[in-house]
Length: 175
Image 1: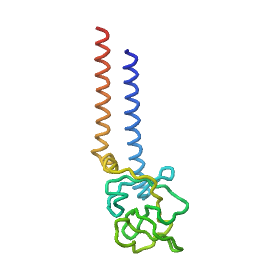
Image 2: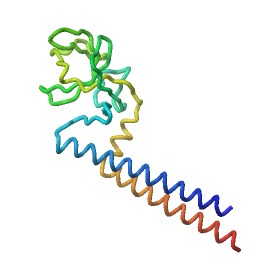
Image 3: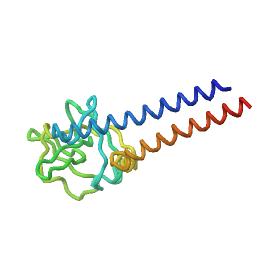
Image 4: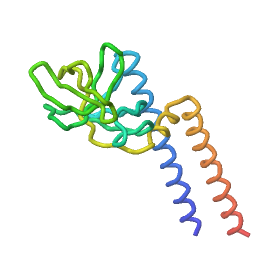
């Protein structure tokens, strides 16, 4: 029975270290890519991730949703893309409604009119390939200093609890 608890303790520690490590490395990568290289949406193996902050694509994509975009070699009418708008200095996620030689015409599903500009291919980050409803709120929290502190603190508390439980069970077995 002691080997089972020891194995559980080791597995729990491995999971805690892995999760905390991944979060710390990911956040460090994002910060470095944004600040050092000026990349507002860093890519990992061609994928970018973002939290939606506007309702222009509601009901399909809502505020607080988490989106995953993937670089494509070409884009077509009906696809939802994320692109960088130089004029506003923001990333926008809208649907392609027209493809022309000058670029892509886009429109938010919840907007009454198409965007009043053409999106050049060079401004496109990628096609939206996944939407995780409401997960963006958790991601935003985890990327904040309080969120990172919570992850590290929670991992430390679980680590200590695992020690207390396994030590208590070991003492009980020896008695």
